[in-house]
Amino acid sequence: MFFGVIINTLAIVLGGTVGLFVNKGIPLRIEKALMRALALSAIYIGITGMMSGENTIYIILSLVIGAAVGEVIDLDDKIHKLGTSLEYRFPSKNGSSSISKGFVMSSLIMAVGAMSIVGPLESGLTGNHTILLTKALMDGITSIILASSLGIGVIFSGVLVFLYQGAITLFASALDIILTVAMINDINAVGSILILALGLNILEVTKLKVMNFVPAIAIPLLFFLFY
Image 1 (cartoon, rainbow, N blue to C red):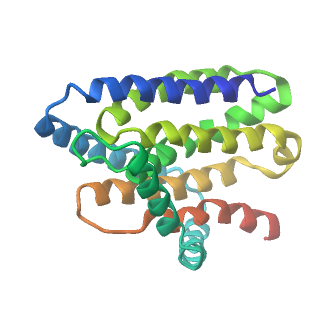
Image 2: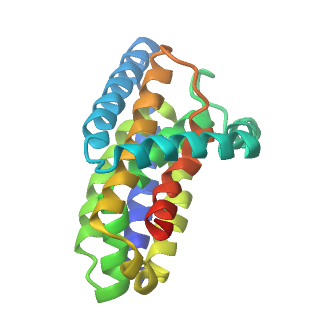
């Protein structure tokens, strides 16, 4: 049942490990250029993905409610504290790479999207892992690129992807009844807006606490359930 999820997770870990070795040979100025390229890529992914939304009012309310919940929980602070503690154990080569930044960016890019929902559903319902295996290839390449600039935090995102996709696979039968195409599109749109915000943060255009908006990703589910 979890074959596709495991392969997807391993692809992220292996790709991230390769990226770390690549990182050791990259001069600082090139690393900074790669960071800007990643930021622009995140903005592109965010803009294209947010267009998939079908219910504008749901998306707006999801962001507002999600931000309120996130601020109360203060996920951003917790993630950065965890990242800081890990940075003592896994220091970067020049101190410029933030584990929390790498974790947040790679988690959003690789956990948000239709494939991250439909793939585990198909694995759990039919045992067909085609979508997740395709995603594993994509995530493996993406994690090499991300880890070469953002460091070891990319590897840790594999844990989140495993838990997220594993849960969907485990509860596939129940979720298949609940999830609709419109709901998946709205969830994807909300997540894509967060990816866009992350790209703007990396370019230092904004200083948004992106992790505090993460609860917004689950809010469209509640609207469709109770509307």
